[in-house]
Length: 115
Length: 112
Image (tube, rainbow over all chains, first blue to last red; front, side, top):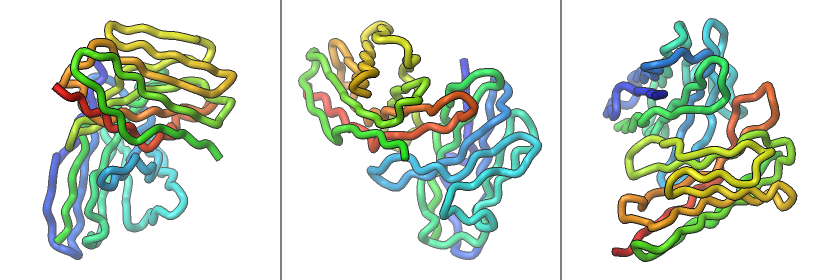
């Protein structure tokens, strides 16, 4: 297999709070993970590339202080949405690349609703 | 920059074949992927093809690649209602990068 999990699967929070989303590769090690955002009926928008043991690389227009990424181990990357606002409400999907391979395996996604 | 185009909708009758088309612009693409997304779920890798291949078949799925025209297609034989989903075409650029460029997705509706 190549199973990627995300936790939580959905979260509702109040505006101004921070939310942490975890992405885990369950049966393989992943040097590289990616974080995407998907708006309703749209394609995936790459937010950042997360590399184990180093700083994440953010795509243009994505605020690194707003979306904190930590890839502390070969099986776990976290995305923290800081001081969340209603416009941060979205579907966040992570993917992981098995070390030594090139294919991305995706998690099931986390739906965030900020009230 | 890279661009991946797909038609947005496809409707077929159960039992028929579905063909989802995709065009891309990056001539240095090494791998091309098809992912399936069901409502409220993440992306499921269906199949992929290396850029030096013309065709790949995996059970009901057939991928055709025309590298000259930068055209990729996914054929689903004997389409079932469970195949209803959004299908994303994605390309991976050359060696050294894991990043994918996605199309906007084709919504496949299967009519019973």
